[in-house]
Image 1 (tube, rainbow, N blue to C red):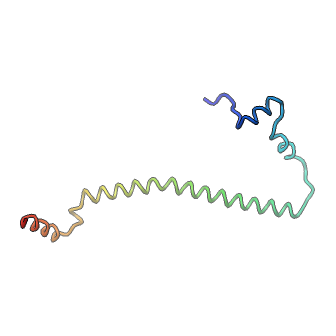
Image 2: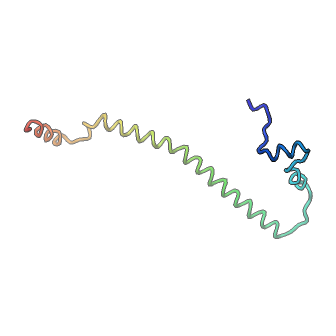
Length: 105
């Protein structure tokens, strides 16, 4: 029931055995104050916008894929309903022609 921790790859397990954490360097730098840099600030804002756009695109694709199944089911139901009630759709003259052709043969 996922109560045992699993490493993402054997490399990380080996590093853990030797008491090295490959992610520790990133965590270490996270809370260090950085000197203000306008270019870095602009890049960060642009990256946030790109990430937001990617997230919205993925959410839209997820919703679209979810709705796709309903579309297929609705189409199948429509086809079954048309097959069941085809007599309501066909004109009576075509039915009479079919009967005449059958009798002629």
